Length: 425
Image 1 (cartoon, rainbow, N blue to C red):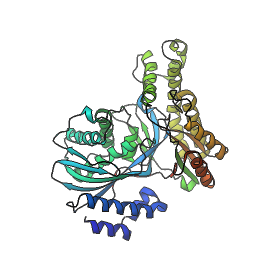
Image 2: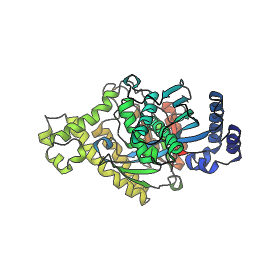
Image 3: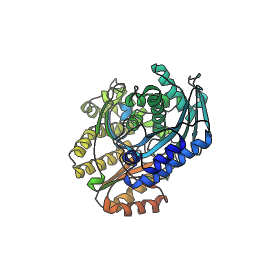
Image 4: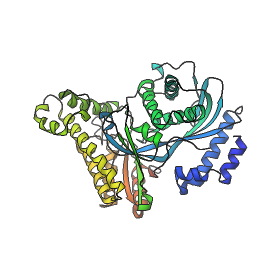
C-alpha cells in the first residue's frame, strides 16, 4: 500500500475497528496520530520503498504465577495495549534493515544467521535469532526495511524484548508464509532467540502471551508443548482498571538477583533427584524440609514454598475470573503478592536494601485502595513495577498518588488486548 493511501485510510477511519480492538476507544485519536507519524518516518528513512505494510505486537502483564514458568509451572498473563509497531517495506536484497525510534539503524545479512556472541544483549541479536529460527524450520524468509516505534517500556516488566521478537516473527510469518508458522511457534522462536542469540535465559511466558494475545492460562509442564487456554475478562465492564506503576528503580547489576531464583529453586528440586520443582510433589517437599535445611539455603526452601503456593493459585484465579467473582480474584492477587514478598523475596535487592521503591509503591497502594481492589509486585521484581486492580472511582486518586511518589507518567492505566502479533494495515 502506498504512503498516501495508508495515511488517508488512517485519517478516514478505515482501520478504526482494528485500532479500537488493540488500544481501546479512548486511545483512538492518539494512535491514529502515532501510526501516521510512523508511516511518515518510514517514508523519510526508506524513500525507495513505496509499498508499505504495518504490524504490531503487544507487551504483557503477568497476573499470577510469579517466577513459576522456569520451573515448568502454571501462569496467568495478559497481553496489553502497549505495543511495538513496525511500518515495513519488503524487498529481495536478502537483508533486514531496521530503525527503532531513538536508536541507531541496524542491518542483518540473511546470509549469516549464526550465533554471534559479540552481539549478546543487542537488538541485532534478536533479529538474527528470529530469522535463523525461520530458516531452521525450513520456511521462507526474506528481506525487509522497517521503522519501529514502541511504547512498551524497557525494564518495566512488560516484556519489551518479547514484543520485539514477536513483531519480527509476525512480519516474517504473515508476509512470507501467509501465517503458516503460527503464534505458538513464533513464541518458541522468540524464546530461543533470547536464550541463545541475545544471551538471556528467560522462560516462555512473555513471548507466548505477546504472540497469542488476550488473557492466557499456560501450563508449562511440558515446555515443548505448553497447554494454552485463552480466557475473556472485561475489567472495564466490571468497573475495574488495571494499573501498572514504574517504580523507577535501576535494573543495573541485578542479574545475580534474577538468576538466584531459578538456581535456588532447582537446588531444592535436585534434593529429590529432579531438575525442576514441577517434578516434585508438594507433600514430599514439606515432608523433607528438615532434611533440606543445611543442604540448601533457607531462602531456597522459602522460594520453593512460594512456587508450590503460586502454582496452585493460578487455576484458582482463572476460575474466579471466569465466574466474575472479582472479590475472590482480588484475594488471590493479594495472596500471590504476599507470597512473593515473604517467600520469593523479590520486592527489593539484598545488594541495595536501602532502595525499596516496590515496597514503597505497595505501601501507598494499600493506603489508597483501603481494602478495595488489590496490588502486588509485578514481573521479575526487585526494582521493577507494581500491578494494581483499581476500582474505577479510585483511579484518578490512585494515579495521582503513584505519580506523586515516582514522577509524572510513571503510572499506566492499561487495557487487556485480545490480539497478539498481527498485521494492522
